[in-house]
Image (cartoon, rainbow, N blue to C red; front, top):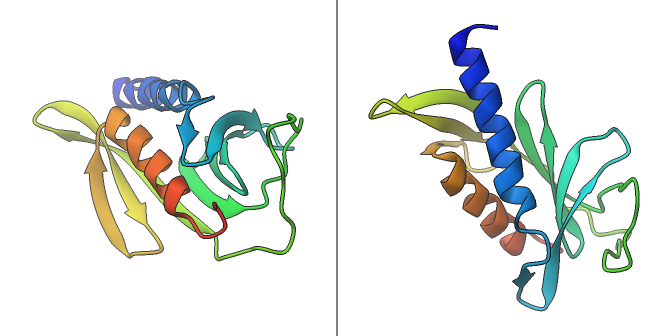
Length: 134
């Protein structure tokens, strides 16, 4: 594996770790939970919406009614509310010689450049504002 690929993989794992640390955090009246979908992809769930993390290609997909491998008592799925899926495509990049993610947001048609910590916070914000979250 090339050095850039190793660094990107390391940052991807760091990002998922940062996001998993949000488990149990209250956002409004709801609590974030960290789980896996039926395919083994990591999920950050808030009420009726989830951010799914796909390794190849690196994507974060926001959607309602996630299919969870194991439903914990704090996770309730509401069937019937299904706004459009939003996908963020991630590409490794650099800013001032530091690793960053270039994020293509298919909903807004914009690119953002974020560190893993900034992207972790952006995922939480997106979930909190996603239709069907409340």
